[in-house]
Length: 67
Image (cartoon, rainbow, N blue to C red):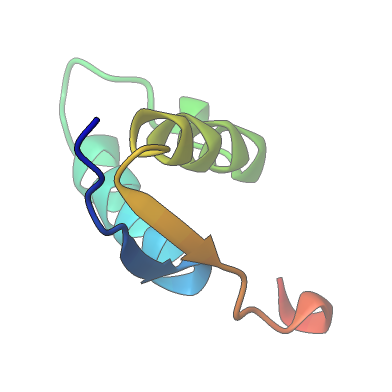
């Protein structure tokens, strides 16, 4: 079995990237901008992490007081 090294990824970077994607999607005329809530952002980040479970080692670098 071939082992590959996982990329270390900061959780703050994942959230920042997801927020940027949400901002772009909010502007799409066929999408409801009210869909892109903090709750949906949390769900989306979870999906991203699950999709990369074998590729990434996610480090939570966020200050919980500011999230």
